[in-house]
Image 1: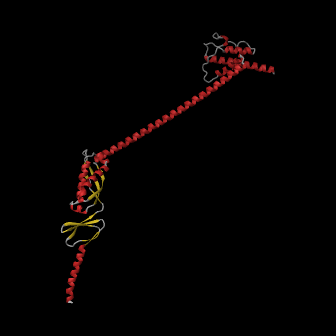
Image 2: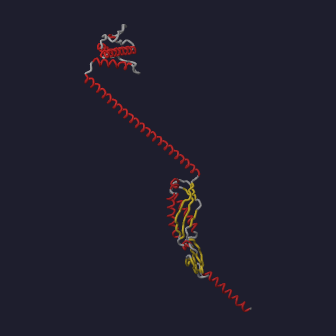
Image 3: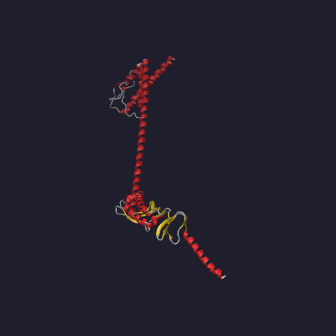
Length: 346
């Protein structure tokens, strides 16, 4: 038993040494990881994903780097614009390690280096812009930042894929002034739109009124033309009938007297000039039917005119009534004579 115990101890020790050597030799690298290996303190190689072997004691894994795209959000940084206003700008950086060896040995702390480079580049870019351009030129700022950072970090084995400005915070007083300006601009646009609407409405209303007046005038013109054509046709037919039938002057005088009461009885007949042919027409009709030579008994007033007509000194209304009455009497007498003649003929 003592011999076996003495042999077991070296075997166990040898097994432990072998196990340690195996474990020190084998390295399993996960996907999207890179391991930098140093041999006696000097860079030797970069282990790729999968199973890798190194020399125990001589080789040592120094850095384990993630080559996936990383996101780094920086804290808000105060930046002075061209018009001497301080704004706080918060950026987000998207980067990826392309060379693990350079990322480990070309820069001591690449995250800190990228952060400081972003701040200085941002101050240079914003320093050449005023506040209004800074607030409205985010895409331009992002492009300039990405170009500068990509050129500077290339030798560090890092590629900057994208830089985004997350927030731009001007001072509170500037915010209040901007809000007032925006409200004033909105009020101005509202007033302009309201005025444009009223102007358009007035223009449309005027156009509608103009078209309406044009159509009404055209309608009145057409109606007047039609009425004139109708009256002209009627007069032409009457004239042709009179000349074709060779009407007796006594008949014309009769029609003349028949029309006078209608002229005197109009609604707006406040003044009526008695024509001089009235007594002749009355006398012609009266003589035609065998009556007296005068249409009515002359007035005994000293101001009466000859032939039984009222003089110019009498009242116009009385003159109109007297003339109308004389005309009606003459017409009635003429009708009576006609009716009597018709009965005799029957």
